[in-house]
Image (cartoon, rainbow, N blue to C red; front, side, top):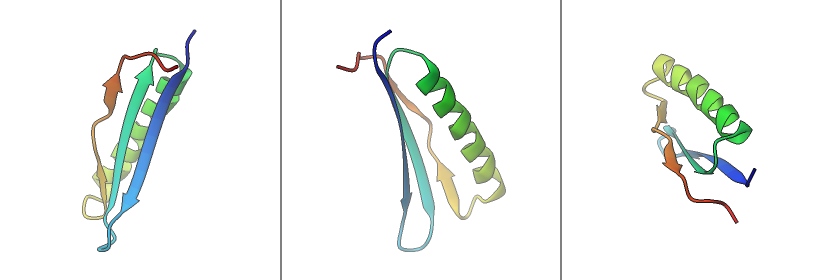
Length: 66
């Protein structure tokens, strides 16, 4: 199996709003499974805190990681 990267970025602006973005590159595998589970939990937290947290959809890229 080749390498895979699941990247989660958490950014807070000057007003205190937290933005969460994620992307995945490479083949499906455990990195993707764990990353998706984390993002699902963060989306649930966004639902409970919509004025403090914004979770963007995951960006998927099927290119291989070198």
